[in-house]
Length: 360
Length: 95
Image (cartoon, rainbow over all chains, first blue to last red; front, side, top):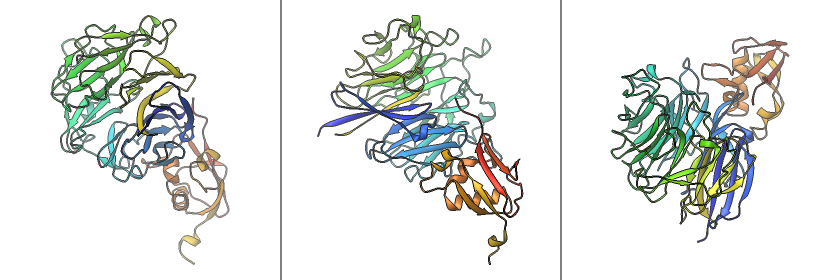
């Protein structure tokens, strides 16, 4: 059956959806949805076609939005999406993941919730907040946010989260208990001799290879890394890249060795494209070597960045790759990152990009 | 007459962009409660989920929500008097 792809775009002013047939040559963009709420993550479940959006409104607090008709209509809920009375309240929902039987939600201040009724209500998984290191977690520039949420697709009791700036944590029991998994990742902002702590790293984005749950990739504030043991140890893969700083990472939908990154010019240098020339860097050997791709991307005046959840691939053949900028431009490649086209401009600040492939 | 019916009834005015989040909700509603907290529970009974939009889990009125009772900014414990005007307003906020 013919397929179509929806690029789900979270922005500071609601959700947008770019849609195309499988050729991905012509795009139609609709939105804004979710009453123009600030959204941090919009994801689609390819099994059900349901779309969920996580965000928070300065007036009305956090919520998870839901559409079962590919974005035509939306509902919202925050029932149970709250910490106990007296604790600092949940400010906003930051990250989403569709598990086999549940929807998982990461929030600010960092914590994890689960919904077993499709996003109608939520239950706090208190193990993460109860971790002994919790009193020593410090927020990154965007707050103490649980922004990366990775499930083992075969065994959802295996969960990895990325928290800025507490680092990567792993649970082997569905979120009851957790351990930090940051060995080998740097914290350059710590005093000399304390640059490899057990936790406290500023992870920016954590992703899993499609066929190997133990193969993780990480874009960190201080370097790019790969793990082949579920995050127990990390190795730098930043050699050959123009900087050690960036936000998003995206894996190929089928190739465990293929990873896409968008390095910026550095954390104290403006955090935009190196030399104001936009480029996506891809590796076909797990980070051993890198290829710079610029075809179709602006090569002058590119003073934008791409935020941590704003790059994704689709499941089509060949794979599509997408990213959105903080200046509101959405770029697409229909050939695995080779050539790029701007498919939407002048959107609000883009916080997240995900894809959903459904029957046409 | 039940116990609830003896509590003060107030006219509550809600902001448009709150009402838009709840299909069928109205901008003006009469509600009963001894204080703002009880009034918000009554609001939630009318349109489930609306209290969450106005209060956090502290529990407290959200930082950028203002509830005026009898012309004065109120908290959850502020008592209500029969026939009072209550205004729920959003603060200047956003970007």
